[in-house]
Amino acid sequence: MKDRGITKTFVISLLFVFAVLFFLYISREILAPFIISAFLAYLIAPIVKKIMLLGLQRWVAVAIVVVLFCLAGIFTISVVVPVIIDDINVLIKKIPEYDLYLKGVWLKQKAYLDNIIPFYKYSTIEKLTEKIAGFFTTEATKIPQYIVGIISTISIVCLVPIITFFMLLGYDQATKSVVQLMPSKYIEFTLSVFHQTDYILGGYIRGQIIEVCFIAFSSTVILFILGINYALLIGIVAGLCNLVPFLGPAIGFVLGVTVAGVQYHALIPMIEVAVAFLVIQQLDNNIVQPIVIGNSVNLSPVMIMFALLAGASAFGVIGMFLAVPTLALIKNVCIMMINRYKQIY
Image (cartoon, rainbow, N blue to C red):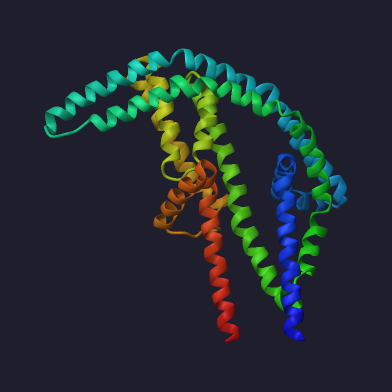
């Protein structure tokens, strides 16, 4: 009888899971605002808790945070995005000029390499540069339309703040409800997994967002001071590319140096931009990153490179961003399960 009861419970649970997945599938077209709101609520929850320590009620703290984020979103859409679109349109028109400049630089380097390395093969690099130039002449022209299309999703823009507000109001209660669903003998282990997940995944994502803002802001300010064109666009690209370890920082560096070279046709501005990006990266690696991320990931460089390649192969850019914390989470959960197994047996 006991085995029959266990089997019945398992079948009912399995049917419930399938029903939930089926419901999510048929309603997938309206899930975007709820997924975005849940993600934002998860990121904002620690800020709400810190504000509540000042003696404010939860709904007041939630309202303050949501209003501030709405104001930041309005500022971004009304001020920052139009500047970025204008910069992209101007940059697209000047692509032939940048293409000629890069080809000139490459021809000089090719001649130098032919002299010192007679057997040097440059056909692969030439093909790569042709593909990059082809991308900028075809796909890059669609970027303004992509940005406008994202912003014009009025339903998401209107619904996300409202849904986020109510999710934050019931955030603690929802967490308690999930824990209460667990059998009593698994509560301690479940809480440990929740804590570890929040420490690794939440810490990594929040830290990466702070890093992106730091790189984007500092790069934009310095490029603006140096008088480099498209300072805001290059700064944002540098910040976003910084999400990809190792390779990402080089993209902003190359982009800034290239624009400086085409704009001034002189070596000094290129050196100034290069030094500025190197200083920013050193500040990020030695000061900002240890503070905002710390040892939350704790993976070796080899494991990070493996995670990046696997994530990019499976899910593209989003996979590269989430691969590192996901691997770290799997690693730590496996260690916790092994330790619990050793305690029991």
